[in-house]
Length: 356
Image 1: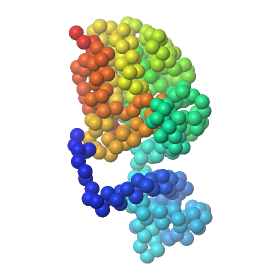
Image 2: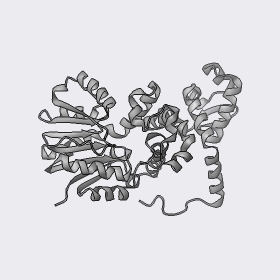
Image 3: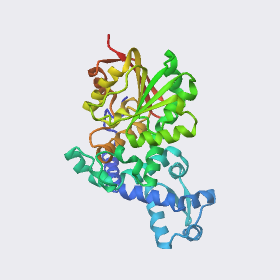
Image 4: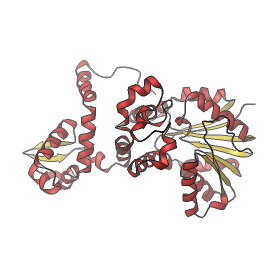
């Protein structure tokens, strides 16, 4: 990947881009407000003929002054163009309105990250998620998930599921290639992966490992699917090195889980996976590595998401460079026997086994 090997901008382009960075909070909030208060939708509905400021006010009921400053901001941002006092939508605004990935990312930044990121510097210096205090007094966001405000929960899970759900159907055949009968699903969250496995293979038995609050959420979700007899549950704080994982599994699955931990913690978790998986079993790790992306925008998004982990989630993890991550795998005495990149939106699948 050569996205970040050299300078790309001229001096003029660089100083222009610096102004974008300086005004980034205004750009984000103006765009979000125009998306949510109906201004962009009203302009989209007007099509190529365009719409005047007065017509925007009439259709959206946004006060005249507010609509005017937002539209003028939208001109500079590149959301709208104006000809003969009529506004039309740009391609960028079309994606802001209609692209699911963009909506998921914006909602996640607004509801989960925005206020807490004010504490990013303290989080960096203290190696703690100082921004999490905007929601309460937890040590990590994972302890808080079942108790966060409904809109925050919704945006968090939408973000988490968007980047993994489309990969699940693609990796199921790979996981079941060796016909595992018992799979340990670590960080099972709402149970989506375990449900997918149980429906894919009627003989497999799944065990979900997660914090007690998440286990309860998964249990309720799985009960709705009538699969409780096919699943077991193990409530545990994976950060506690004294809490062992249940043994005797043909495979262990971790999807977008290990990025929630520091390198030291990843090695600790993998050491316990080493004890829990059978000698001829495999550990499957699904992760979005920023250095394994097809597009620069994908790498950029993952790099910025790392700052959510810094300020909100736990203060010490990130979306990893695969080269850093592989050192953790090796340190836990595993070897990668297969790596498949660019699965779904952004994922890589690592198939690991114990070193021989």
